[in-house]
Image (cartoon, rainbow, N blue to C red; front, side, top):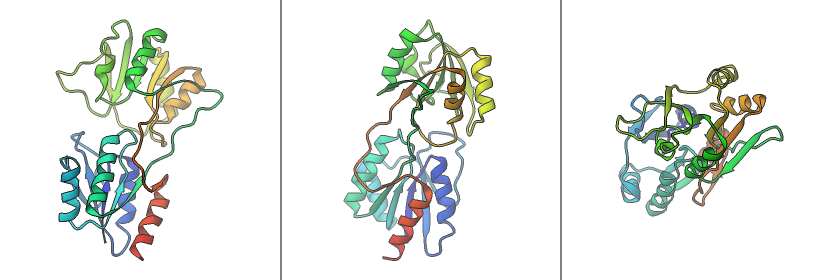
Length: 247
């Protein structure tokens, strides 16, 4: 049986490693190629765009893919919708591995918004020094906020001609410890964190640190996901795969 894993997350990499131990299953992991030095999963690897729904459907057909597991980032909604349409077109069973969202506790000071643009609008009224942890793709949404200083963390720096807000860029890759996040917030005198509700453990320490310090978090809610079968952890995804293998 041949499985295509749409990756780009730590969950996808761990899933690929565990699938590699299952006899009779061949896994191919696909990465979008947005970072020049991605963490490479075990097994066969494909990097780059498929070219939309038609391109992915053709790939599924040409490579004789039996199962598709979408383990992309919760905010990579376009590829998830493309995967849903392509799997239907190619007649391939599809599963979404979607980690649970972070849940607000009574000690958290969250302002929940529906988009990055809405987060920028909130900052204009609320903040002076911001820890921006949304990656490098949407920095332009904050570039007009000239009165606010930003610490912008991402895996790789933005393109040289990208619009970025005033401040400094910190290139780093999680997981991050609570001590690390607390030190960053205190050292840079941060008053607000902007985060996407990505879920998982790798970047949750910043939320814990903000809670400890009574700091405000502007939390961007996840986009909609396509309909279809979903699981929230790797064990459940493996159970789905093994069941398919024996039916």
